[in-house]
Length: 488
Ligand SMILES: Nc1ncnc2c1ncn2[C@@H]1O[C@H](COP(=O)(O)OP(=O)(O)OP(=O)(O)O)[C@@H](O)[C@H]1O
Ligand SMILES: [Mg+2]
Image (cartoon, rainbow, N blue to C red; front, side, top):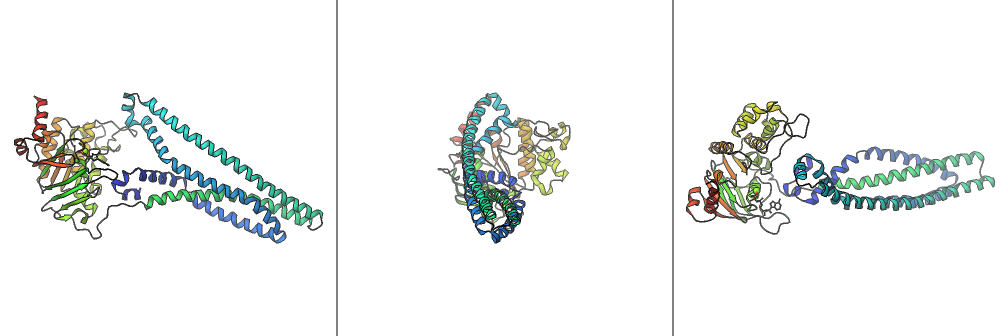
């Protein structure tokens, strides 16, 4: 978890890293007896060595016969372990897909829609056919492994038989006393037992070690974003604010720019808004501004210094974002709020202020357990909330910190008109000290911004106040008129 938390957002969006993470997560739980196994392996090797030395002093040929008989089985064990490891590794994307299908059909969040569209049978069939195919491959492999291993174990048994015959002949020829015979037979028995268990143990150890590679693979995955070695202290109060200067950004693996040559400014105390069609690049700007990604070209300046000169921690505590896809913490209501400032989250006064700012006081009053009420259906005693109620908690969360910039990506999509009005009058109030960025498709929300940027295809195509934009023919006035017409 600690290592995963150091990775950047683009790593989490990479399926290969997801595979690695999954392998590391699964392996680490199953591999804990590694140390105990290594130690017991050392112990049995020492015993084996002592017995073998004893036997070798009496009859060196015996040892040669036994070892020769054992080598093929041991090599074959190693071989099948490696093959099984590689096959499992190749199957991982399919296994993750199976997990995903299982979650779709058998967990609470998707249940509504899966039932609504009657998709359960479809996904169950998909699951069954893929898991049957995997199962078939596995059965095939296990059969092959059993067959070959059994044949090779026969070799070992034949070698043992030869050794006993050799001893019997020696006794009959008078070259070995009965006492010596008893000692050697006992020792041989021990040796073959120990060798068998060592083979199993060693092959298991070797495969454990292979699986451990997965963990190290994952641990070697590093964040691609650099952290300033001696970060510039974040301004207590920003003077010139934020400036995007010719910023472009391309997602890894994408062929086009999500945003292309964007320039804008956000001064302290200002509220600016971005509008534009789906996929225009609004959320991408937000993610760049809170340094979830680094711009592909151009620069993002905070009080004149490049954003990468500041520590990520400072950026995150000064620029707070309520994301379009915020988290619904299935914990207590108070947790959903105090997580906005985990270092000072016990401050009741601030919790109540934030709740008030987010128009969530009535919601908290309605909860049977008040702030301590568990919300969400996941755990015992939890109560369900509506979409807008979850959103109010998320907005309250963002008000907890002492940020200088508040970003709201579609903050009021689920809020009722009254709450929306109240929330935005708060933003204006807040912005007197801090600044805010609002992204919304509702023009009634957007029009109160000091400056509005209209985006299209990753570019800013218009900028100005509501009045200025309405006075110019173009995208904004067209869209505003379209929305307004809907209300008439
Ligand atoms: N994580 C991602 N990886 C790759 N491409 C992405 C990712 N997120 C967004 N994109 C692409 O970048 C473009 C801009 O997306 P963005 O999320 O910024 O749009 P948006 O303006 O916020 O849209 P919406 O109004 O639907 O929220 C889209 O074309 C999208 O396909
Ligand atoms: Mg968006």
